[in-house]
Image 1 (cartoon, helix red, strand yellow):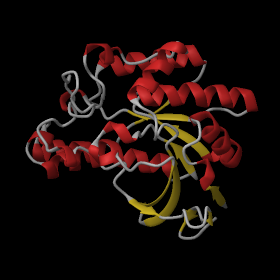
Image 2 (spheres, one colour; image 1 turned 180 degrees about the horizontal axis):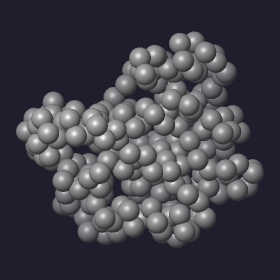
Image 3 (cartoon, helix red, strand yellow; image 1 turned 180 degrees about the vertical axis):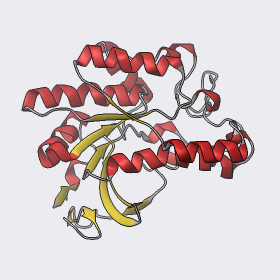
Length: 259
């Protein structure tokens, strides 16, 4: 297939529409139910309704989410008349790391924190991505120093079940500011996590998230005991393939060269 690089920087709706028409049922949204994810959900569901597709939306329940996130899932299901698919980590793997390192292993070292994220987030994410070609993500350049080079289209190479798979990650809000996100939420009456009103710009697992002061990095409340360049869970730390040569570039999506 070919990715239209000239869509880079276009409106989120244009990007989602192209993605939907290109991938159809092989496109999913995976969201942690943050502000950006809710903007994308609103746009995605509306476009699915317009063009006759069924929205495929997934979220990962790590087992340590705040109650407010569960409440938002219920509100979103009700508003959009959808059923968000909730995916859980492998219970056996969770039991192994908790029994070996303790329930709050993430505070002990960066390595153990990333192990916890790998088991509770990355493993279930890969199960979702195993059977799809493209996914919608809520990454923005302004979210953190680790995301400053985010583009609308990123071709990822992931290892899933021992096989390399090429997947297109689509970040419709890559160039949006935080103000643009919140303007959209309010203007379109989009439901959002009530923790945002209590100083939580970025929300993850309950023990790994805290409120931040005005003017601080939006993700400084995530894993706050670590340095900024380490504050990622691993979901977006994968090999990226450059496809932006001469404006258009043929790319292969699938397992080990399977289109």
